[in-house]
Amino acid sequence: MRRILAGERKPGNGFVGRRIAGRWHKAAANTPGRESSTAQSQPPLGNGAKPRLFDQVREVMRFKHYSIRTEEAYLGWIRRFILFHGKRHPETLGTEEVRAFLTALAVKGKVAAPTQNQALSALLFLYGQVLRKEIGWLDDVERAQRPPKLPVVCTPEEVRAILREIRGGTPRLMAHLLYGSGLRLMECVRLRVKDVDLGYNRIMVRDGKGNKDRLTMLPVRLCEPLERHLRKVKALHEEDLEEGLGQVYLPFALERKCRRAASEWVWQYVFPSGRRSRDPRDPEAPERRHHLSELVLQRAVKEAVRCSRVAKAVTCHTFRHSFATHLLENGYDIRTVQELLGHKDVSTTMIYTHVLNKPGIGVKSPLD
Image (cartoon, rainbow, N blue to C red; front, side, top):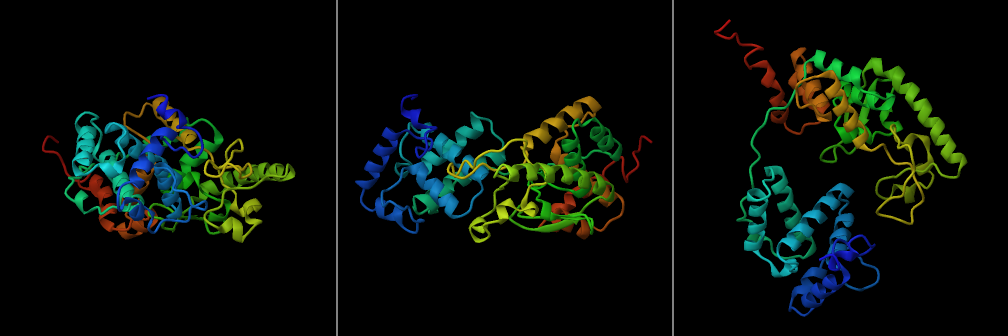
């Protein structure tokens, strides 16, 4: 297995070695009707040669502008699906093999329902978008249902205790934004300078969940610390410019349309990384300063929860839950909270009303 997967990390090989990938595509080419169905409606490949399976998956996902995280997750599940069935090509597999794989995940792997559904979504994408096979035969695969769960919410005192224990100026500022503005983790990490309006005390969240934009509040007490932080970031950006660098990643074709935008101050990340790096999708691209890794904030919050001795399963997303719940407790309209959170349906926001009608909040216990 090690020899076969030796090409796993080499550019162009994907997760599958050269020998086995070449054998798969040779078999697929000799099967009547398969090559033509695979090649239809695909993005241009440039050299005319049929790419390996995982290269096809990457090509289609980037053609459809999937995020790099989704790309990595889908490739991982497709690889596990192939290895689970003895490295057979997916074109030779059918409903029973998909069902067996998903069942093994739940029974032997004991994965949660969202994990099983993500694996099925990856296989649906493989067969429907890459291999161009009719996916009607996957309709009868039973999808695991995610049981409803109530969010973990901290009291205002618990939130303040956790925030006090966060070490480091940047992680502390980011955690305050999570709670004070109701941001998701990656929404905070990916903030750009142009999206922070210190004059109107608001933040424009770009390409949030569901690729939607929304406006949310910027706490007044964070304006001064954030302004000081941006001065430091701007000084770092000017140092990069002096070295002939200072570029940042731009979405889609914006870099080609606006050639100077990548070096402009307004497009820089509010929370940049301490070191420069190259785009894993484009090794020939120049060194850029990407945003700070979300792991920095996650580790800081985890350590702060331990030091504060708050006996709850607190994560970065708990600040967002607490933001919504505390607004409702303070009497704000649920529609207003829905807009601030960016929920498409108000029923999603309604889950935060659980603290308003549970014992200990609005109902007096008979023991009392």
